Amino acid sequence: MSNKLLISIAKALLLARWRQTLVAAFGVTFSITMFITLLSFMSGLNDLLDGLILNRTAHVRIYNDIKPNADQPINKNVQYAKGHNFIGSIKSDGNRMAIYNSVAIMNAIQKDTRVLGLSPKITAQVFFNDGSVDITGSIFGINPTEETKLFHFDEYITTGNSADLTKINNSIILGKGLADKLLVQIGDIVQITTSKGDRFPLKVVGTFQSGIKDFDNVQSYASLNTVQKILSVPNDYITSIQVKLNDIRQAPAVAKEYQQLYQTDAEDIQTANSQFETGSSIRTLISYSVGVTLLIVAGFGIYNILNMMIFEKMDSIAILKATGFSGTDVKKIFIYIAVSIGVFGGLIGLLLGFGLSALIDQIPFNTVSLPTIQTYPINYNPKFYMIGIVFSFITTYFAGWFPARKASKIDPVVIIRGK
Image 1 (tube, rainbow, N blue to C red):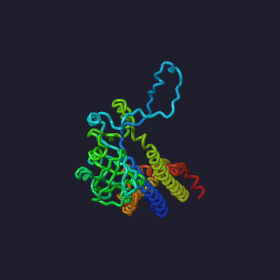
Image 2 (cartoon, rainbow, N blue to C red):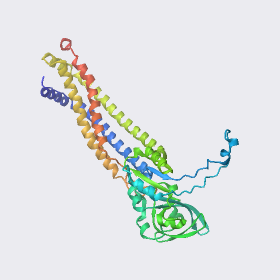
Image 3 (cartoon, rainbow, N blue to C red):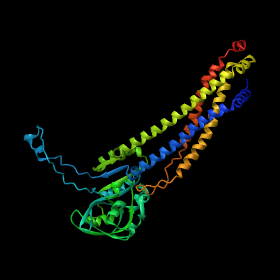
Image 4 (cartoon, rainbow, N blue to C red):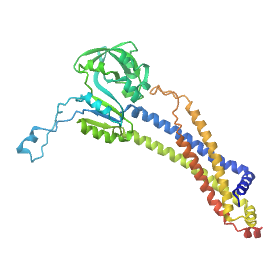
């Protein structure tokens, strides 16, 4: 029989039991709606949580680590060369934290086609003087332009502007927790003392809040030149080079290559933040599992409804087969019914899922630790909608295939004789 005729028969059966059809469609609609909403919200939450650390972390960090000196005099003595020498309290080898030949290294890295950009950094441990109390803290010397471009620095500044670090001499941006301890605002002067005992005044031009309270209580930022003046070091003094790659997956290999090439220490982002990737993967897996479970449950609902429809429509199926419809034709009719329920319910579910996600996206989300976040995070990735409609089609197809196979095997003679 022609598909047009089979579709018209399927439509008639659907409308004849329209309440059951709506119930089945509602099950699919609800499943798709929650699937889209759950994945959009959980993915947005993952992006937010990962962004707190991963967006601020270099894909490859080049630095000089302080290590014990492995080349001890006793190891060079011929008398003890064949023995195992146990030495306690080994001191560092005297290497400085600054990267040797940093300017040439940065010029070479910038020419690497795998590199998106880099930002030099200086770390200085200081004391913030609050009357007779000294508060331990850190000042990071940065290039504000590159730090904003590569690591979203401006997104964490709650007051002031990062560009003021280069415009105003001897300026500093304090962490919110540190600024509250010192009771300072923009325009105030803070006094710091270096580890060598030198005192240095700095003008506050802003505050930042990273979302991690422990960091905000001790960290602050200044320009590279300012920190170099605080430490009384030359202009090429750099303690780390932060590299951002075009492809984050290349970070482990690039880190090993740079470590051997420049004779420095190098750490990739996967090693530095493996726990965050694990947490994100687990949350995503849970979201997909719950969403798929909802769709499978909806499929069982369609399966039960079609089974009941076959039981109630035994006479109609027998008449169809007695008038020349084959078992394959009957199977197609019930598969059309199942798929039409799935497609209709799925499309409505996509619209409702988008609407519910947009509604959640407008709900205020105010927290002290994340002042730059105004609403709940939502990710409108088209991939979620594609997965939802495809899985809806597959689920409803198989939910209809088994009852349809049963209907195709009905013997019209047995049914008519029974009547």
